[in-house]
Image 1: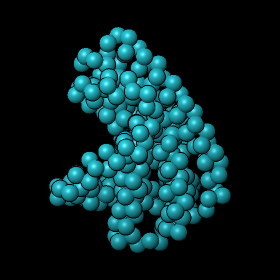
Image 2 (image 1 turned 30 degrees about the vertical axis):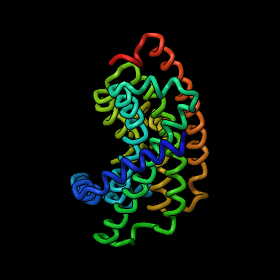
Image 3 (image 1 turned 180 degrees about the vertical axis):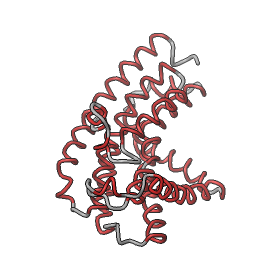
Length: 268
């Protein structure tokens, strides 16, 4: 089931990449991220407010944050969108009555997002290096950063399962996503370190796998401390990955049964 879902996702993605318009978007959006990061750094007065936290290049800091936006949307929201699409097409009940693993099906659909996020990160780093040079980046740590993304991906999919179960009952993923996206972007620290958040938002931020993922990736690529410098973050991230996966699966199953009893899987 996992392999079949991943293959279906890959075919859909390849169909999109075969169009010039989609390819143009995929290549131009990272450049927009770099330009936005540069503009924000100028409005913020440069990187000086963040130097005390060890981030000397604010443009690179924001660019890396924006580059993982696709990981946020694909893991948290595309799971719900997938369920919503199957519900509208009238195929959700047929899928959920099978004995196949729900997690494998949804995980396989989201698996491609990891590759897309890695691609976005590579393109952003390439554009940044071309424009500003590689002096602020520790590119030798890129393999470790990719491994951190993989671990963070598991936790994000777990959160996606939890939200997916809610969407099965709400049947309105778009409004739900629009409401949550700015809040999660704020707490994950896409544009600034979560250390500047007031309490208790800084505590809530630590409960989001993307926050820890971004902090670890930035530490590796911008501070160059090596994998040993992020061991504490990786332990927290692993715990959250397991916790969210188990909680997401349990909540999804509970809400699925509720929707099944109420007929929510057959009517939209």
